[in-house]
Image (cartoon, rainbow, N blue to C red; front, side, top):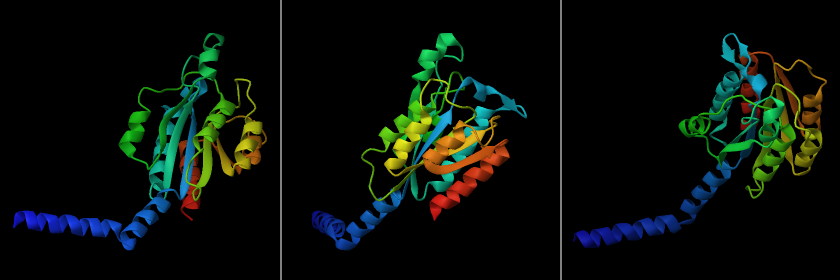
Length: 228
């Protein structure tokens, strides 16, 4: 009797899994999971170690990025990259630092603990290879579901220092329908510098942030836009 019941149950599950309604539900879940594809690029150059109100700019940025990813997790998958986190910000460490692009969290739904674990042991150290970070982001979008929008959020407190051309790379991303947004955090050159040109070339927006509160406001606004 138990064997008969088990067989009936297995057949029922198989029929359910094969039904159009079940298939449609799975398809809808997959479509939703790819609604937005968001790559976050975080500057880990030495200048991000500067403290504001006793907290490093890097830790402030990391906290707001985690909050942002949590806000968009219902309709987005995210990727996290840290650049300039190796070597040092002196000439002796420049080559290593400029080559240091670390994709620490591949495109997937946001899981807070996994995300935080991926950033363990990483701190602000070296130079600022923005162009190379953007090139890495461009490559990461290859093969993603065509239905999903694609966007980059670059958070940095300075311009390119590794000899790359981030404006040119941003144009290349735009040609592939990848929008590049830039957050200049405590960036002294202001609105008209290279960071604004990167956002303009990438078809995105440039935001100025002078505090953690500013970053919170910017990311909250961006999360609302992605949810539309």
